Length: 131
Image (cartoon, rainbow, N blue to C red; front, side, top):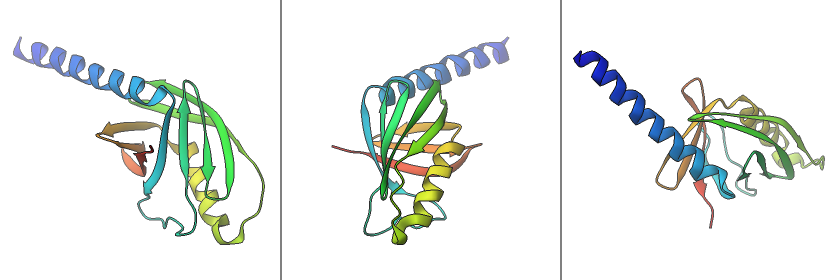
């Protein structure tokens, strides 16, 4: 009986966290890439992520991009990502990796003003809330 009670509390607790993530990032939020484990953020350019309901957009160091977003608790997926096609030699590799990482995201979480995007539990990118 204790195990069932504990499991119910865990499910309720996780559900309330998921709703907070869902509501917090879907309401026209703007983010700047601040951490990118295993990769280098170009010093002379920024990557951003803007989320508005079920759409995403932003800057991928050189170009702008857009796409779709699906949220289900802590699970999220970005799809049909498209972008402008200016070629910027110094950030081209970073831009390709950034867009690939966005496409690979399948979950996320928020802590304070930080949004962490992950694939199968591994951190892909960390964004800080933009003003």
